[in-house]
Image 1 (tube, rainbow over the protein chains, first blue to last red):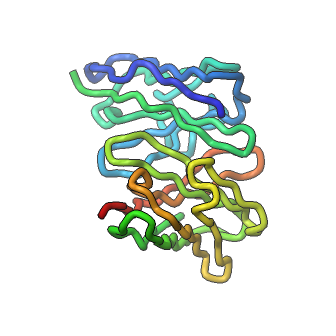
Image 2 (cartoon, one colour):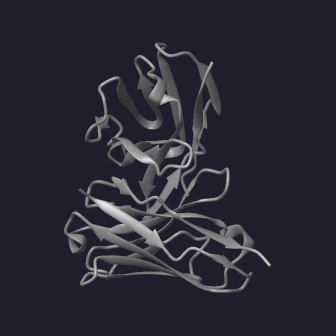
Length: 108
Length: 120
């Protein structure tokens, strides 16, 4: 099973700041099979990015993704108040899906 | 508009059974694989199971293999999860999710979830 490790666990930032979240895989992941989700308290996850760098429908362009192999990142260019949430990466391989443990973005 | 509505969550004793349902609308249900993903209280996301659009292919996380069974009724656009031999560690909110599709290994729409609590 491929393990995804996200870092840091929690980030305290202010609106307007730029942030980069990391997702590292225990073995190589196809970029086509790497996705990112956003989850707010009491809500279902929302798909942000798929194929490592493609934005899902309706996702603003301040969100971008990159990476390959074992290292992937999600960048938010300028934090808006609604961006403070938990972010998860997810991969698919060998008929199994795994998620990272999440990175929480909190308001400083 | 895609809508996924889960139901069936409840309090159940260890060793008991429960069946979850997910009513789908807004897309051609039989054309898409569907999945269950769970989230234990205060924890992260944990994939449980996926079924192909035809219902022929089923896939399970090792933690539920042999205990849970995923199925679907395309005539009712409804996804199911039969959970047997439930354990305390199965306590979670269970989300129904649309996807994956061929070449697109992600979940693009999610329901709001239904809570399963396994406790004596």
